[in-house]
Amino acid sequence: MIAPLVAFVLGLGAGPQNRTVGIELVRSLPIATINTQNLKENAAPASLRFIVDTGAGMTVVDDSFIESLGLKVVGELEAIGTGGSVTTKRIESVTLDLMKEKISVPAIGTPIGGIGKLMATRIDGILGYDYFVDRIVRIDYKTKELGHLPIQWEPNLSKYARLPIDIRGRRPFVRATIILESGAEMEHSMLLDTGANESMSLPESLAEEKSMPLEESGWVGGVGGMRKGKKSRIKGVRFDTETIELKSVGIDPTTRAARNGRHEPGNIGSGLFADRELIVDYAHRAVYVSRK
Image 1 (cartoon, rainbow, N blue to C red):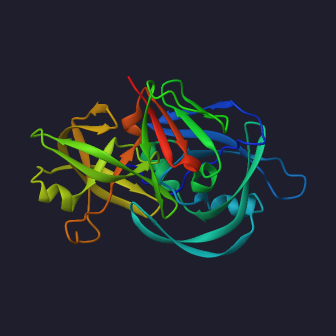
Image 2: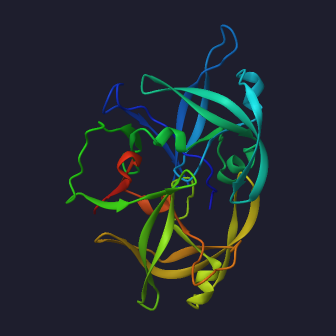
């Protein structure tokens, strides 16, 4: 699983509506190439490649661009990603030229070359919470488009399954029904994380409680580094009345013991939305997944 850390920001509201830009899908992850303002006098903008990541609480820029883009560092910040914690540089703002709008978001700077190496493609940044918070953002995994919807947009619930979200720590959480291999069902809190390429992962403590068989998988990682992964088997996951079949699920090491039967949240990643649309509407505390 490619780790979370920051989600991406598109402008809607007073600006133009129904605009889209193309994205690239690399191992299921949505990547947008965006002109990023260079603060040095008379300097041309840089074309940077950002992961569009709802699971990221901040926007991230590889620290190699801090000097070349003239970005202003205003302190340090401890950040936590899939690979662990890391000390980052706080950047006052990064300005993106996206869909004919200039969008300024606070950011952090840290080396993220390891993510690109794992994905075998160049990654310059991760677009996070401050992008999504004021806009209705559409990620279309089928047509490979990123877009904005009008702020007055109303969903057709025959076309979309609606998932209420709870925003905690600048990240969106949903409730999902997981269908185990035995056919038993359980409801669990899940982080909606488009910066993770696995379809879904669950905490190891929950897998052990439910006697789910564990297998070794490949390397996973993110801003904090790399680690070996595990996986197990399930039948699928259900949102609203929409069921998505799954054969396997990633298992995340538990960093905190379950207390009073409460386990850490699981993760829903971009792999789950292949050939679907995902619409993120923080203002109305909901996300929408297109039905098949």
